[in-house]
Image (tube, rainbow over all chains, first blue to last red; front, side, top):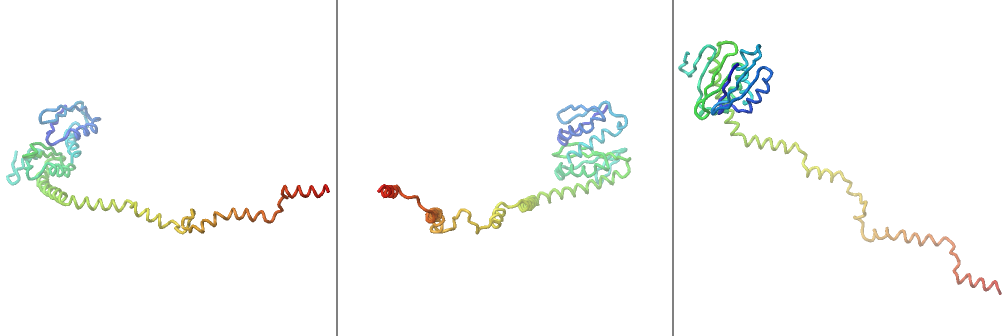
Length: 66
Length: 172
């Protein structure tokens, strides 16, 4: 399990949702929205990508926004 | 955590952290710059876009070269900032050039009509509009005069009066 907190003032939800679609085969994603953050919870992560999935996901979201 | 006094970099294990004044470099510029480095490092952004953005870099292959990359990040920030300013300055000229190129690429309706007119055989007069009234009348009269001439060659049947006279002569 892992949690990534994306700042709402920097990242947009559309990019996050798009990234989740692309990564859905590697883990189970759920989104929780707080005042300042989109909290993405990752469960049942594929063993092969366990170490890098959070960083790759964050990079992917950033890439969709660039 | 080590602090680089010159650039305010904080290096810890495989991470490098620094802040960027977003009043100097807007968020759009920072995002463009981050995009440029996505293949080299993992990048995460945080902070307040109206004050200061925190950039967290994580090396994909260890700590080697992270500080150097941070310096390059600042250089690229300047580059992207300049690009954005030039882009904003030239926006109208760019739009004008693109609009003109598109306008020239689409065939002009007036040109097409002119071409059609040029290709047409204007000397043809299928409706006889270009002819004078006399000329057109001659054409109309022709069939009736033809009918008149048609009868001349043939023998007319004898009239009723003539037939009666012939009948009286025969009786006598």
